[in-house]
Amino acid sequence: MRIHQEGNHLSGAEDLVPLRDVEQVMASFSKRFLPLLREERDRPLQQIVTIDPVSEKDILRRPLLAVQTLNSDSTEETGTMLSALLDPLLPAGKVEPVLAIFQNEIMGTPPRNGAVISTSTGTILQHGMTGGIRTTHVGCLPALRKALEKELDRFFRKPNYRFVEALVLASKVISSGSVLLEICASDDPDYTTGYVASPLFGYVRLPHMKKQGLRRGGRLYVISPETRIPDLLTFLRSTPVLFDRQSPVNHLRTHPRLTAIPSLNETFSPEGPWL
Ligand code: PML
Ligand code: MG
Image (tube, rainbow, N blue to C red):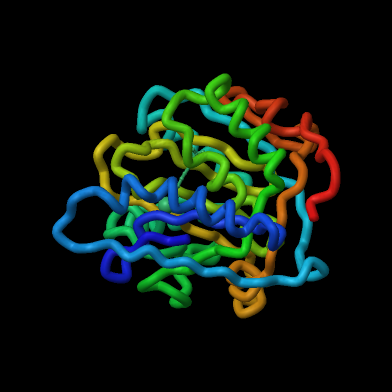
């Protein structure tokens, strides 16, 4: 379910659920968006519902990325850490050009409907440059989603209500095997936490990714040189991926400023069948 205003994406929610749960999930998404739809505004919003039936045999099952969080009190501290995280993920000398793309194309222009893609050497790909690439067809086992949501207030400073959906999306993007890293800042002016996702560090939550009140944000996917772009786009846009388990933290690269959160990582074991 997506909420648009004159073709611009404002908010969205999606899941991969058995047929018998569709009605209930739709009702819960509608309830979530009702306050937004009721807000008074000069231009009306559109509520767009898409139901895309997929066969169970086509669903890939994957573990979520492991989660770490940065302890930071300012955008300056977070900026320094962002460069330190990108350094081992990119070829020598490419941190600056990639961060410049993030600053110019994501933080320097009005929000797009999806992600921008660049190569690890700092070239922007034209695919979806205007509207951006939207990653869809993701889901998370309900018990796993609940287990994650239960832990949030214990470990994260608020606001944190966007965390689980961002983790699910980033986990799909990185599971493609072609995306070396993703950098994200929310376009919500009141939500200042962002993240960097990568196979090496997992999902690193970054408080103070941007200043409060800034209506700018979005996602940058940085891909490896061997990437076959059409295959990547097909995977991101239409391959159904269900996240059904957490990831162990023991394979993660970490850093003295990062805290890995075990209970968001390896404690969950699914109960019973999904279907
Ligand atoms: C978005 O608004 O779509 C981005 C959400 C980023 C969530 C970061 C977090 O809370 O971990
Ligand atoms: Mg968003």
